[in-house]
Image 1 (cartoon, one colour):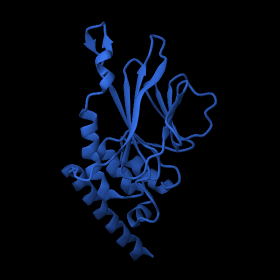
Image 2 (cartoon, helix red, strand yellow):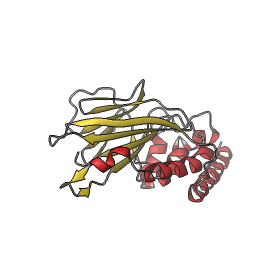
Image 3 (cartoon, one colour):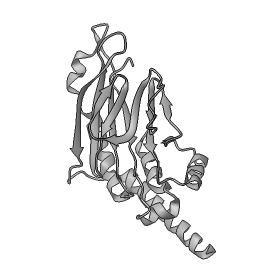
Image 4 (tube, one colour):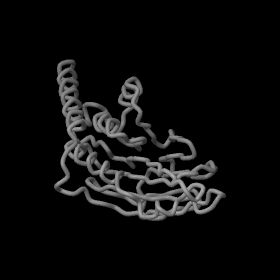
Amino acid sequence: MEKPLTIFYTANLRGQLDLLPRLHTFLRQLKAQPVEDDSTVMLCAVEPVQRQFLLLDLGAACSEDMWHCAVTGGRSALIVMDAMGYQAANVSGYLTDEGRSRLDANLLQLALIDETQDWNHAEITVTANADLTDRPHALTIVAVPGERTHLEGRVLHLRAVESGQVGVVHLNSTDGNGTLAISGYTILDLPANTPPDPTITATVDFVLSEARLFQKKRDKDQ
């Protein structure tokens, strides 16, 4: 991994779509903040190396207890998260086969991972599979919340976060052989005064409107 990497991640959103416009604003603010150790990461001792970013969800973005999640088979939150720029989400346990098929037909950029499907991006693998044997030499990010954030060789485990929180992890290569180290990590609460992003607000309104129509059609057919 040539470039330093910052990972932002969420979990346990449980279909709280009203949270997502404010969360998007917060994520944009976090991404714009300089990383303390970036000044020491140089290319040819002159040109700073550009940091790369990943935005992941570790699961439970939707819940059957939330009406729009139930009627869309788990699609509702994922559509909004796709608009927010999430690159991968652990959909284990809530996305139905029909929901996945519909999302695939809509050509979402968001990668849908579960126990059987990983996401591979450049030198990074994001997995929800508990079997970490025979992993590739790429950085492997386990998209299942754990008790603590730690790096085992090239396998990164992420500490669990709750709804309204963002986990942040900074990774750097410590030598020319690709050895990785965590240079910093934290869990941040979404500030109460964060304004909602208008584009994501409109996306939420659209998704809820479509979910209501879907529910009416389903009720009519029953």
